[in-house]
Image (tube, rainbow, N blue to C red):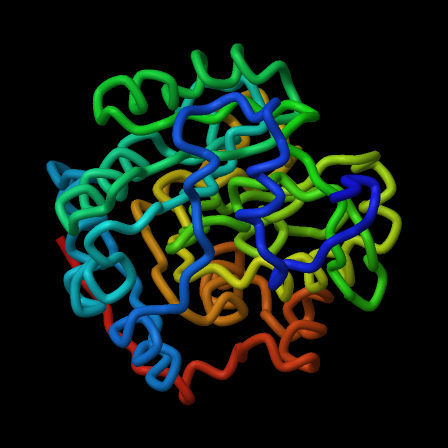
Length: 315
């Protein structure tokens, strides 16, 4: 196989990995692309959105994470025994968790533990960071989460990027972070925060951390790019971390004065609805955000919550 020849997501990654001896994590050559289990397929016919709120000052972030998944029917609705699960947090910046620039480590740890309890064969954490990856892993707390849970923290490197056909409105062929397209279950786990170009960075924009190449170019038509990437990756489920949100000077922030405590988690199998619900935390109308409006127009999901099964969980 010629690695310079773009491939589609549907083409066999097994052949790709068999020929790529440079992949740098154990077990990679055995990863298959599998069809969704009946439980996962069923979720597609009954879209939901769940908002979890920690009102008690003593509430546990990890307990709230478990509660929102329980409200959705349990993690086994999304993860089956023997699955390879890949979680895509936002850990692009070497910032401490209290600065709300990166996914809360306790939310990530709770999701990993749930996947392991569901019988996942492996759980992997993958993000193509902006700051130095090792600094990001250490300062954000994600490295310690991986150590505590025994999950795989994948270091982003050029050998793990492959040109793939995204077939988007703006993105046709682009380097993709291979582990993300090989998961049996792909969980999008962004943090909700302000962004200077797209107004907000939520679930759909989190996929910019799932690709390589000259990512500065992706900001030239940021709203359509977010939609193209969301349509390509198609996560099993999205959990938006809004425990703390960054309300200005995003996406990197750098001061607690930019942070608002919301103690909220949003879980949905509709990526547009997840972003729309999170936008309300910033007092933004979903239809006024370009990437949300475009995503609904292109059939990726809806910001009309009346079309979804809605629940609220309060701790």
